[in-house]
Image: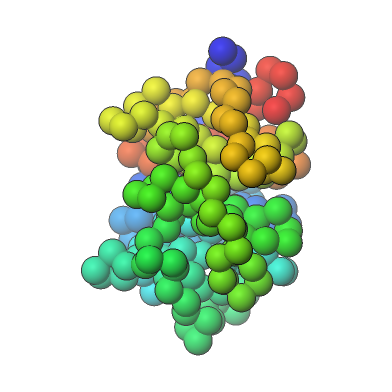
Length: 216
C-alpha cells in the first residue's frame, strides 16, 4: 500500500474546512465553523473572496460553469444549491437532497455524484438534481472526486479510521474498490486540479495537497 506524498500544507482561511472544489484555477473551500465559502489562489494562498452560505457546507463541485453546493440547515437536512462565483448563491435553486441527506459532492462534467454516508452509497444526479443511479459503497466514505484514473473515494471503517484513497470503476454495475494509498486520519473531501489531489484536514483546520507515487 502506497502512502500519499505531501506537496503542500496550508492553514485554512476558516476553521474546520470540509468541501473543496476547483473552479478554473481557483480553489473553493467551505468551512464549518463560520458557514462561509472561501475562494483561494493556490499559488499564493491568498483569499480572493469570502461568501456567507445559507447553511453549513458539506459538499461542493464545479458543474455547468457554476458550482453546486450541499448545505445543511439548522435541523441538519441537506439541500443542493447553485453558486456562481462573483454573484453568490441562487436561493431559488434550493433543492432537497434525496432523503434529505448527503455530503460529499463530485462531478465528471456531465453528472453530479452525491455521497450519502449514512446510506453507504453514491447517487448519480442529472442536471436537474434527480437521481439516475445508486452506487453501493463497500465502506464508509470521507470524500469523493474525479482524477487521473477516474472516480476515487476516501474509504473509512466504522470508527472512521484506517482511511484509504481508493479507485472505483463506475462502468461496472457493482464496482469493486481498489485501494491506492493510505490517507491521513483527518482527511475529509477530495478535489483534483489536473495534476494534484487536495483534501481538508478538517479538525486541524488545514488544507493539504498531495500526489501518489503511481500517478493516480
